[in-house]
Image (cartoon, rainbow, N blue to C red; front, side, top):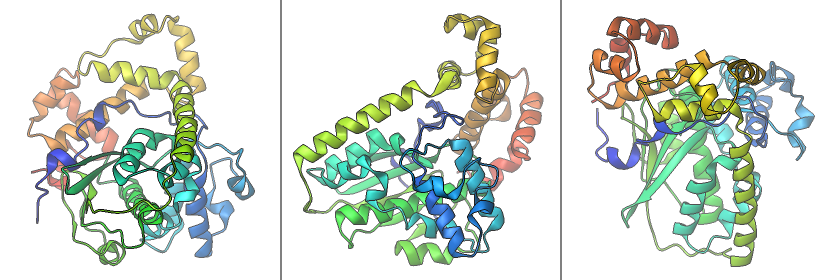
Length: 359
């Protein structure tokens, strides 16, 4: 099996150390949920069934005032996996994500002066749209490299991880063709999981080599001399300003959980107690616990989440032993780490490493 030969470009090496956006806060447009519900409805699935467990009704998805959370998106993804008879549903739903679906973010892309400006804008403001995958972009002057990291689904052996990557790839291709032209194409797609039964559909949609069992997810495309037909500096400046305001709002409304994740990630292996965290945040421990409970989580859950994400990154992308990883994560020994990892993923660290084929 081919192994990615540009890991420094296509692997988002900082992904495990970024603070995740809030899972609970309802601050995003419902466009991704709307695309999934519409695709399911086209297959005969009742929208109410697709939205089961989300506290959302289908008419809300078309209202500009509706805001959703990653928890609600996660529920729809899991409903879709359970209800759909089409294994390629995420790929097909992503084709509904045209550039104008993204509001001001989309108009900023359309009005960018150059492909490089559009790329830089996309990387900086991607979180305003509540994406299923975070992404980083770089270029060597000839080839553009885009690395994906599923937001809240880090385990590449989990079906929701693959679903998020499929949707993101298809959505990127659709939106980019809208502003770059219908001849835009990926030159290579790389995925960190095994080929699914519907792998042949990937090549039909992306029309390029698709490589599985890689150490990261993403795609490459050749940087050409494209003319940006809709470039407009005034429109771009206006849309960019609005996206800056949205990004600031998202960063401010991430909740106390986002602050705690950041503090935990800043010092892996030396995790402070909740009392120390409360002191850093200038709060009483009891008040901190109440705030976390209101956000649907706890300090224990957040610590486990950070440890799990870091463990997955270490197992996939390094040759560290279980003893070394245990030390990095603040466990007293490898056995305690192993038990925790099985509880998180259902697999032992060794089985997980074998399944993801880290090289």
